[in-house]
Every structure is written in structure tokens, then in C-alpha cells.
Image (cartoon, rainbow, N blue to C red):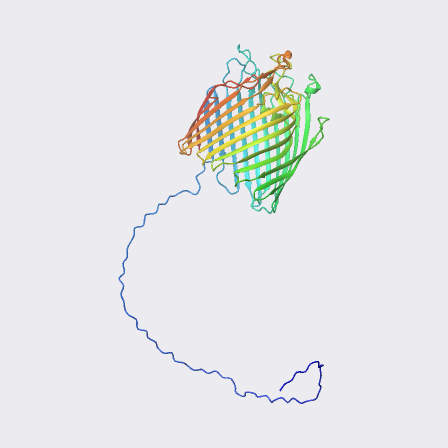
Length: 560
């Protein structure tokens, strides 16, 4: 029976009671181990006996072919090249280098090229050129040391004078220059670890001078000493590469500094120092790369009152990869200061007048283009630039009388003049390479100059085309060919006729082709023939400095 009650409150009852606990029971038996052997019955499964016939077939194995190849080809430390051509032109080359060594690499390299022939109708133009170099590399555990000693001896004639009567003797217009140089470089050897700071330090010096001419008793030969100290640092962190380049260039130039017979502006005892800093940062992604920084130069002393000692140019470049490096467009800004010296100008034009003021060239360059690869064998580059030059060096024939000379004018030598100018340029190139068998390069360059003071950029071409290639036939016959075309070069006329001060000479087009073929009898002996200026065009490299016509050179080479 049950019942439900509603609307009742809670009731708490408290009372006293006893709750007895039953007594506990303890097992009195002691545990023990039961060691009982349980027998395992023998079980026998009867199987049917069946014999299967086995057949064995033996197949012939084709004999393996083993080609024994040396791990490394034998190196011959010595090399000699000897040759002779028309215009009585001997050539020679000697090279000797240490063979494979983990710690050192040392060698010597000497080259000679001369010509003792004569161009009909011109003053003597013989020349000789000898260059030598000693070099060495030394590898320590953590450092690398590099050294180099250079030597140059070059003799030539200021032959830009027509002479049909052999009036000028062989020694009358000759000149000879000589140079000594040395370099020492030290760098750390941890280039496999990108997390470490990579650095290098360089010291170098070069002394370059011309010998006193026999017919010049005033000791006006030029001398030039150039010292360089530099360092480079590189550090990679994540996707950034930090670079810092530092250079200190000190140039000393003398010419007729004690000759009081010359006006002050024609005597030189100059010093110039450039302190160069170039900090840049490279940031890259999967398909892009950006470089940004500054190119800063302190140029001492101040030569032009209109220019500052401190010169800075931004350094910016960006490029992006499209279609797996098939096309890479790029754009950038660059520039800087180039220190001109008697050595650098003389190597551009050896027929320059030695008593020349030295001004440093400043460049601002805005460029852009696209490069890439069309296939595994074809690559290309198309670019355009806008450049601004300060103190661009130009060469013009001299019109000042030669004191005590054999001729009344120095038209056979060149004065250096400096001008500011803007330049627009277009360039296109294409390369084809089929393994190591065939290589072909084609380069076209177009320049448009706008000088500030001069009518034209003297002796600089407006259009230049270069085609070159090489072919390897069965590692026995090696052929090389090149063709150069230049047009648009001009030389001033007013230096020769003051009345024609607004006329420029259109210099002939340069069309120069060369071909060389070498047959290698074995890895140590070969013979070669070289054809220069195949078109036999006797053009002027500099105004009135005509080149030799068709030339044939032949010779042999030896390895030992």
C-alpha cells in the first residue's frame, strides 16, 4: 500500500543506535609451490608422400663490359707556344704550373708578341709587347692566401705620320713603357658554411712608367704609382645577404715636374686618393631578387670647384623569374667613380701624350632589360640604358708644336680631353651552345652620345656588332672565328684645319674578321694557323694609326 503526499516539508530525525561489526577471519595456511610435471602426448599426423619432377633451365648471361677510366687525367705542368707570321711577327707563350696539390697552387705565365714589318707609306710602326706573371695560392685549414706579381714591357712607335720617303728612322718616334705590380689577398676558408661571416683583405701596388726618349733631353717621361688596400665582407641571414666592400686607392703621377721650360699647366706632380664604401643588401625569394644599397666615394683632393668631395650613387636592382627562368626581366640603378691613371689611359690608347691631366670619371647608370633561355642550348639578353658621365675621357690628335721634335706638330699623338655627356644605349645578345662542341655568340650594341662641350664623342662607335664562335671536332680539330663591325666613329677636323672647326671626319667602318684552326696530334703536341683581318681592311684604329692588313700566323704548341 502506498500513498503520495503533496505540499509536505522536509523532516530530519536524529537518534542513537548500535552497529555491530562481524569478527574477521584469517587464513592460517602457508603458501607453497606445486611442482607437478604434466606429460605432453605425442601427436602424429600422417602425410601423403608425393614426388614432383624438377626441371632446371640455364640461361646464358651476357658478358659485362668494363671500361677502365682514370679517375683524373694526367696533368702536364708546362706549356710552350711558338709561332711566326708575315710582317715578321713572332709570338711566344710559356706557362708552368704545379700539378694537383691540396695545399698549394703556383705558376708562371709569360707572353710575347711583336712585329718588325712596315706599312708602306707610313713612318716606322714596329712594336713589341711582353707580359709576365707569377702567381700562387696557399690553402690553410681556415684561411686562403693568394699572391701575384705582374710585369709589363711594351715598345711601340708614334707612327701616325705618312712617310713615303723613309724620312723617319726606326728610333725617331719610338716609345717604351714598363710596369711592375703585386697583389696579396687573404680570406677565410669557411665558404661552405653560409652562417659564418665571410671576409677577404687585399693589398696591391703598381708602378708604371715610360722610358726617357733618346731625342728628349728634358726628362719628361711620365711615372705613375698606384696603391690599393681593400676589404670585403659577406654575411647571410635568413633570406638576406649583407655585403660591404671597402677600397682605398691612392694614385701618384709625375710628368716634367722639374722642367721650368714648360708652363705650369703642362707640369704634373699630382696625388689623388679615393675612399670607397659600397654597402648592399640582397633579399631574395623563390622567383625574385632585390639588391639595394649605396656606392659612396670620398674623392681627394677637390679638383673642380663645381664638384663635391663626397659622391654617392644609389644601388638598386630587381629581377623576377617567369616560366621557370625562361624570361627574367630586370631593372636597376648603379654607378660610381672610376679613378683614372696614366696606366689605365695608356692601356686604352698607348699613343696618348704623357703630359695629361688626370680626372676621375663619375657614372650614373639607369638600366633595364630581359634575359632568359629559349631552350637548353639558346640564351638571350635584351637591355637598354641611360648613362650620365662626368669627366668622360676622349682622345683627339694633338695640335700643339713638339718642342725640339722632328716634326712641327704632334698629330701622331693624342691628347686626353674630358667632357660631361649623356648616353643612351641598346644592346641585344644571343648565345648558342651545344655541349662543348659548338658555341656561337652574337652581340649588337647601339650608342647615342650627347656631349656637353664637344661636337661628338670622339673615336667612340655608335654601332658595334660582334659575332664569335668555336667548334670542337672529335677533340682533334679546334676552330675559332670572330667578326667585328664598328661604325659611326668620328675625329675632329679643326685640329688639322682651324677654318673647319664645325666639321668632323667620318672614320671608315671597321670590318675585321679572324679565324684560327688548331690540330691536336695528341694531348701534348698541336699545330695551329691563325688568319687575322681576313678582309685585308687597313682601317684606322685611331685617326692616322692604321692597322696591318691580312696576316697569317702559324706555329706549334708543346706540353711537358
